[in-house]
Image 1 (tube, rainbow, N blue to C red):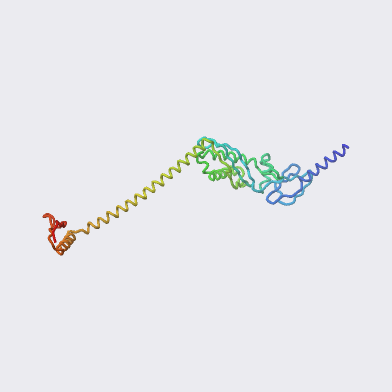
Image 2 (image 1 turned 90 degrees about the vertical axis):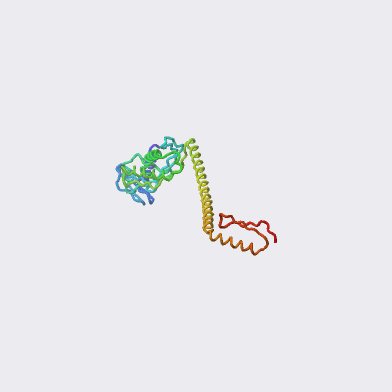
Length: 281
């Protein structure tokens, strides 16, 4: 009885070891082969691989874009106010030709993809670096304007993570993108933001009213300039000779009417208004 149980366990163990030594690697992934505990520096290319049971094992690593989610962060802004919640996703890829080296260098910092059989190379390393960079970049921004600068924050975090990873592994990691999924400030900051937005809108309204008033004033100025110019033209046309000519025409009309009329001309004026003082026909 015990012999059968032991034999069954051995068979299952051999089957498990055999499964670890042969299989298929999907396109975009690579395998890291270990033989008697020694890591082969050459990655196993996509396709079918075969090894010796017990002696050889192959672990599959993802060479595709990997998402690192960082949730419920509460970093402090430059004004020393903490955010209520900050959620980001950092996407990165690893050069497939460097995965065997990373397997050794960061042996305890890989992670297993949830619901998948492949490993995520240096996942915990990237996660830790990303977290530190996020806190550093947040500390450079004011909390009151941070909600309007999500794209700037994402770009800064992306640059910071890439620079940090390049310090020890130049050309191995590529941070493809960073997405700020949620950014919630402290309730007190939210109130200040609302008041700031309201004040900004009021300022814009006041500026518009000033512009309208200035435009209306310009219209009145133009209208006054037009009247003044017209008056100037009229005054320039009323010469002494012109006025005398008009007076002579008026005297001629009085003479043509007949009857008795009197015209009073002041002694100190060469031209004067004509006054009819009730002459009879």
